Length: 405
Image (tube, rainbow, N blue to C red; front, side, top):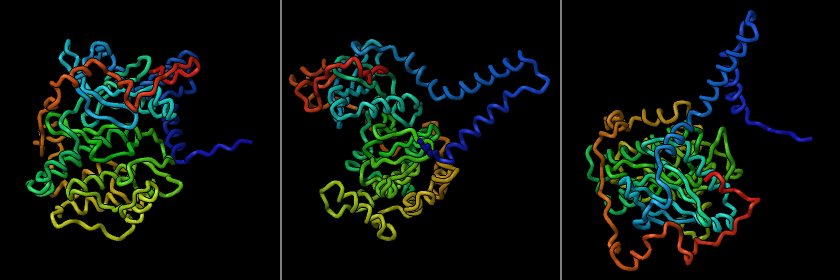
């Protein structure tokens, strides 16, 4: 005998939608068979429209982005991650720049992360927000899979904190700069959570600035589609909520609000709120951070804006259900916090992207761009065969994990 267990809240939501759908298409006792089929077909169309609503933007972007892989020219490497690299590329025919993420198929297969890579593609295809890095299309060749992404070239939020700390201590009114970047992340999380996507790796490194200075959340590598709760130990230790660290690691979208609290604290203070006790072992470090989370009220440095203390404290609640943003109001509850009211934060101008930004910079070519060695590498979009992240891939006809790229 096999016993299946379902989350009650999830089933209630799904059944409610089904009942609403059936009520809208149910025939009267006097309907004939023809009328029943007409109304049922109309109902099916309504249902399918609802199911496909999140995919419309992806279809539109795919159809609008006609550039092929061989039409792209590599400009420079923007960064490298655990599985591949991201390059700035140009479509000179159309005058567009993109970020091209290249992953070695062999490396993905060796690490057993085919499902994660496909999951990232599926999640990115559901996103259409000014506050989240957009996916334009995907490609593949014999050795790589590629994500053609929106290019945000203003640097990461962590670079702003490191190189321009004065932005957060000389702003007027005090705390406005921190509130601005928090608002960017709130807008991104609202978009993701509406689609039942939990990011699970919100941190300054994953917030990229565009040319105007607005932050966009990136990197969906740890993101997951979650209807109710999930049980995975995943994330960056400094930003992981207590329930993610604690066995059995059961969590939901409220972990993203915790991470927003850590991020806000960090950009306003210059460091994260919880200590790892100087431990180097990964698991011991995680446990040290968890102990630090339980050590009483948060300690704020003297320059920390008074207006932001309550905001951070309400996000960093140990109990997930008590956390700001975890209630029915979600992102709206976070925007309604007293911090934004005290700062008279103009959300209307913000969402129209008319609000002045604390910082912005124009992208410029790297200093080594015009050197011979760098120029020789410009034509190669994928990883170099000598790169440690590149592993030769022998296609298996029975394994078509990259079929949708």
